[in-house]
Image (cartoon, rainbow, N blue to C red; front, top):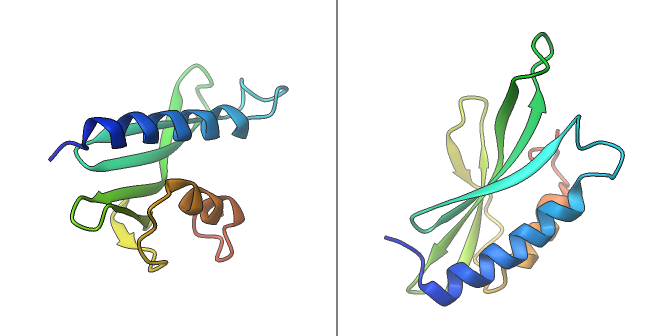
Length: 113
């Protein structure tokens, strides 16, 4: 089910700002951070040039945020090596920025390695 319009617009704005601030000015040709929205999920994606074919960029999922309409809150998920999503078990948060901070802090090394 798609995100409610207001929730989607706010999430897009917040995650777009987050992505814009993640790539250093000297590195846009080496790494990109973007996001995709599908249904009730926002997926954070890292892209890098392929090591043998630098004109081809490889996309890797970093984190996923899922919105629960009933709770009015977001939950954080991490991907395993097979790109399957698992609950990060942080607990639902009303503000997606709290979950973005957890991804940034990455205390377990599961998001950014």
